[in-house]
Image (cartoon, rainbow, N blue to C red; front, side, top):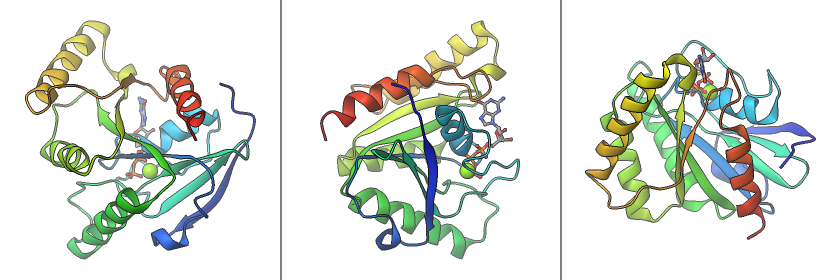
Length: 198
Ligand code: GTP
Ligand code: MG
């Protein structure tokens, strides 16, 4: 699938402020700094569509991007970032939780995991909750350009094994780099496929 047009629609503080759920949407979530906003820009081939920052915690609202007037990409606040104040963290997770559990046009949640580091408790907890609540999700390994091939293969085997300790089956997996564009075609084809079920 090719994206012709991507435009920012709005940032919402509450789920009921989000655009009307009249089109399919796909949201990106993961720990702060994992590369959610960068991945959205990479998919859309736009450098500054979603705001990127070296400082974790940049994305604090639900940000909607309309793609070709047909579907939405959504940038969600990160989870598991210790340096935001406890009250703020609670609001983030409440916002994410309400969004994930009530957003009726959410077709699939992309859970991003940094391919360079072992699976974190916050990731495990988060994915476990998704399983319990039967939220459809995929896993996206990010920043693959930062590892050499052999290290990457070992790291992914470890991550998969860690996941398989908790689940019998793995969800769809994607390997991405926002620097090289790796994984772009695969994710867009997946979205195209799911869009046809709308
Ligand atoms: P929050 O909004 O703070 O939760 O962060 P985020 O998950 O949106 O991460 P963001 O896209 O802002 O990226 C965080 C940092 O990682 C930035 O410095 C990016 O340039 C860098 N980064 C993201 N993706 C990649 C990637 O695939 N490769 C490399 N080398 N760097 C990346
Ligand atoms: Mg962000």
